[in-house]
Length: 331
Image (tube, rainbow, N blue to C red; front, side):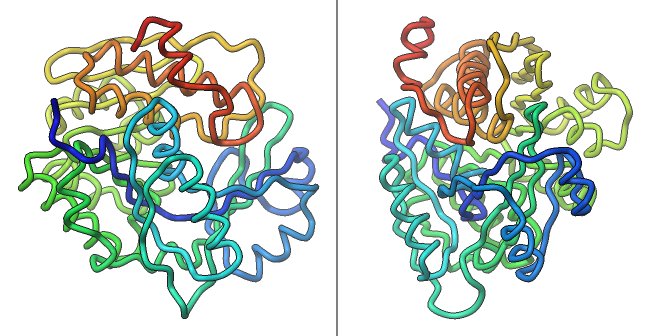
């Protein structure tokens, strides 16, 4: 039996997600890049929010969504992220704790307000994200609680948070603590936008600190500057022991040391909203890995969670993931 207090601890941008339906025309009229994540400032966030249709607001952020998913499988999850002591900061803290995730970081009392991500979902279920980082980007190494990292089977790092230099330092601090304690470090590349900006830095982090990498096809190709998924996959196998590479409706490919496992996507009657699909996949995979599951089981737990979240509006699971996994014979 593991001596870990947590299965997974996530470190990421603590955001409040604001989700609304949108048309392609609205995206074009407002200069929004479809299917991508764009960073915006406070003024742009205020303008877009005023123009959006009625929205659903819930604590979010990529790694936070993943930790909620881990908890949904019955896992022990914790989270480190920065919010301000304002209304949205309180919303974030209440929501993530109510979902069963340990979150006890100190809120900022000065500086930028709590971050928010304005997510516009078009009829084809594509999500276009407009992110005001706010307080989330002010995370520093001082926010990393060494005892919690050392007590976690896996520390999961969110690529979106890689932009500010102090956050990068926090990543390396957390990874160092994890490895000294004999734990694993996972990284999600988050978005091709992130990889394009910090390709060399991500490669160095992967080479030196990462045991488990999550990436989609576009992120992998950007990482190794290739037009071939297979070429990117072969290159990655030389740099990272375990990787989960998602390919939308084509499922995923799990690289497990010298093994390659192709995992089918779980069928969905109707794709409603792809927001959080990658986050949920990571939740299932990480939960399985932390509990000692094999490559196939980890991949199928990821596919199950991703299928659940894209079948409805919003980035958090609505069904009982533990029950679904049990029914599928995965737990």
